[in-house]
Structure formats: structure tokens, C-alpha cells
Length: 105
Image 1 (cartoon, helix red, strand yellow):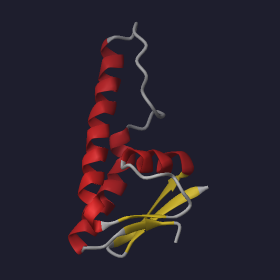
Image 2 (spheres, rainbow, N blue to C red):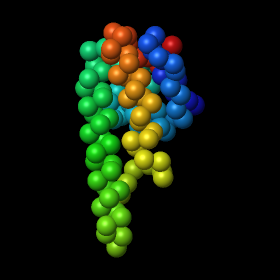
Image 3 (tube, helix red, strand yellow):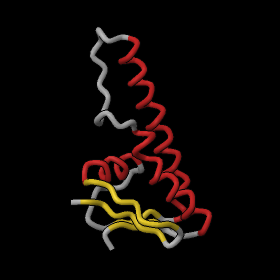
Image 4 (cartoon, helix red, strand yellow):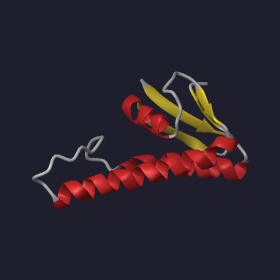
């Protein structure tokens, strides 16, 4: 399964299931076949993604500084900042245009 995020303000952002569900969990949405992030919800969604990026990067830095410790870092070798960038850009453009972001419709 894939997630295809759509907005009338931008091109589509397509993610594999695990990555799409990760983005939805970060922004406080239940992973589902269909959904919406309203214009009013976009600022909180962007803030949540940016906060998650900071936490993720701190965990990666901690692991690099202390390889003897076991520091859990969610995900694969792709940094959350890189993976989330297209989605964050979509959210920003959609907010500026006053458009919702949807998936599964």
C-alpha cells in the first residue's frame, strides 16, 4: 500500500505505507485509507514534524557520540528531515493557498 497525499496547491506526495503512517502518526492522525489535514490543522502538523526531526537528529547524534550505548533511532538510514521535507513543503504551500491536504480520495 502507498499513501498519496494530495492538495490543490501542489503536486502529489507519494510515500510507502510505513513512511506515510509515520508522518500521519507524527502529525496526530490515525493511519487510514482516507483522511484530511485541514488548513487550520496545518500549523500544528508542521510544528509536530519539525519537533520530531529535532528529536530524531538528537538521537542520531547521541548514537554517533556514544556507540557503546544502545540508542534507539526509529526508521532506516534515511534521515527523518529528508523523508519529511516534501510533506512539510506540501503543507506549507497548501496553508499559503488555503487548501486542505487529503489522502485516499
